[in-house]
Length: 440
Image (cartoon, rainbow, N blue to C red; front, side):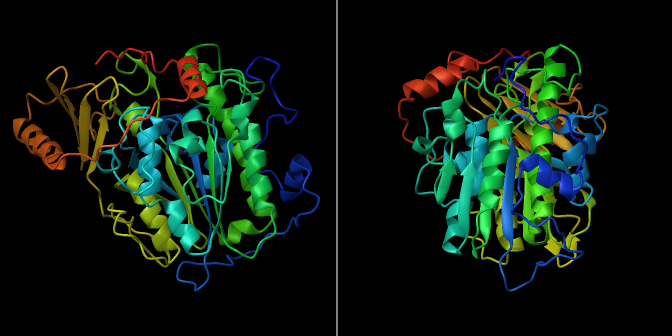
């Protein structure tokens, strides 16, 4: 429960404990605690790899050790990242969950999947990563922890098992989902099957309300408690990583860890997320671990829509035309530099803002307030100095990119009334009746 006494019996953990400890923590006496020295699957093999996609809700990239954060919020994820590709400049197309998750699963930008409001489910006509993998013979499963990811909103397309049972335990203000999601994930991984698997884990705890967890005490202010939630999530994500190692699955599994969006702590005057497009809400962590690839840091611009086509390409599967974003370049030995992607982001729920990130530049158009913002992210990563008036040529060029992006219109999605329990849950989180104000 999200009260001081809601902790589980599992105490604080160090990064990537020994595999024998993993077996004790998880009570997995039936699995083998051996690990192969070399990958049993590599890019280019005829066989199909396993795939695990982890999405951590509301996780800022700059609150993780791998991105330079000073607090020990993510020891397990940082250790995992040492053996993975860490993308330094990765972005979401939206600062809130529904359109972002839709973009991750379909490879479509919000303009094309059409989701701008809570009342718009994912249209079943859009092919998802899950459906493509199921067609290729994958066993598909998900463990999710947000009310708008319930099956009625169609994010379950292509999943043979879709567990949202944590939502039945009570309000997300009172229930911490990470232990449940980790257990759900390891239960799925422990199933005996000859088919390759695709597993999606969605962790929710860094989302407000923020709670201070035992063993992860950074203070009592909102950001302190937010960091405690990240560390708590990292603790249970570490158990999933340990299971992969202990069972030998790491040698044949592509693992992607990312966020759907970030969070504001008055960086630009506001709190929470949704109403702005500054980096604190659309710059996201993205870590991809591929058997046979060495750990590296990648500096090119990448978007969340590139994740699904890249997963398919890594697995050696054809990428459907509907996945319009380019794959992240790679060869048999690892990811390649270059291939910067121009990224368009938007928020149209209680706001009307569009943004473009290209090279070192970030442009934001606030259509309601008729304002334009231009930032040189190479010199001003915190977006404090608006250069729109001093760089008219660059401002005009990026404005033209935004206008061209929307020139053909956008997909229209039929709205449906929110289920009463979903509306109640969203209201409890501060949504529906209005998000927290933002200063810009």
